[in-house]
Image (cartoon, rainbow, N blue to C red; front, side):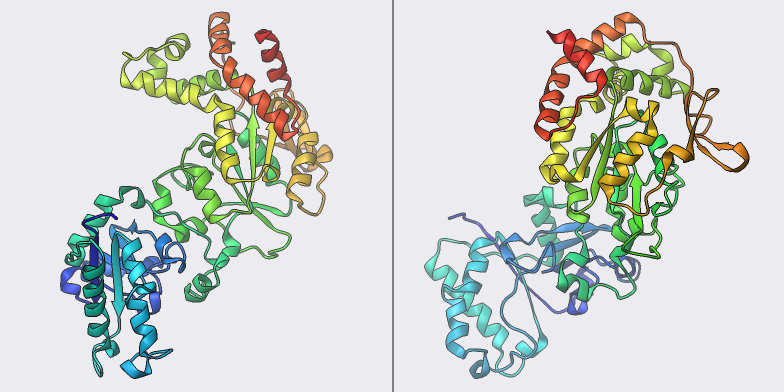
Length: 474
């Protein structure tokens, strides 16, 4: 038995203590942003509680989270409701109440939760003073029959203590309100889950994700998010602090589809691929979403990212050669190590794919050969359409044409005109020197072997670049 368990009995709405209770649980979770804004601006509320996160039951799985600087603690159920007024009229009779207190559900709620927070109604404190009876009896029973030491703290101190004990719970894990009937019932009627994407293009960067994005939005049934002013077309919700803005903020980027059945909303954020947080967050909010990733030779990807950073005047990329970046040791400057990390780590393909496959079944994941996308996009887009199950069928063979000046495929418009990727795409830069190529081939050798094993397990063909790299291993 764990000693020094925390035990808190909260009641009323003492706003002077920075604590508030929402009526009928509305707005705390699923989060209603306006409620949090009002609490913060008008009453300076710092703490609240809910029994809804992540779900109503079982109580021992409830967690806390922090949103808009307001600490939300997990609330337990004590068995007293607005209609529970008289001792003799307790549902099932007084014996049921005492059974719950003396070794039953209410007792085990306290035993199994390091911190227990209860909310009872004013009606429980009038009449037979049922609330006082329940908790006095409960405290006495716990002290008589266990070695637990019961303590209480004011709401604000309690919240700080809770997140001191459970710091990993500070970050919320948003779930889809429409997957939970109770959550759907207490969610605003103005909201709809139809504005959540059906699939994601997760990256990695510099593998052709922008070209794929352009090809996808050519399809009449595929709709992307509106552009983010800070990250161009990418929302970057699941991998960054934007996640803490909540799902209302995320859904604002998507239109309400005119036909829920046939329209496919999607977003492309290339940083999702190697993010440690993104797979779990995506699976929590949109578990049925399909995931598309593109793989090219990780050595080429690393070099392309370096050149991309040089073009954008990154000080480290301008200061150091590519060889200096990829071979930098532990004593290198922080700016050099950061650039090295962004060049090399996304290319650990098997590690990142395994992380996504921890949360998604393999049939929801499509791995595209980036070289094939560049050389023959129409074939790849046939595969993508089949994977998504999108209709009507779109003939990319007739809609795409190769632009010899640009060096890649573009959308064919009326009168022979074309729509291509922006000027920042398809830039020419010197080829990678052999010294860098040899180093990277060795650096990625084990990663590539693991990738080949994973693709074999998934029944996926090996890209041509991977077959070439594996031949060097023999």
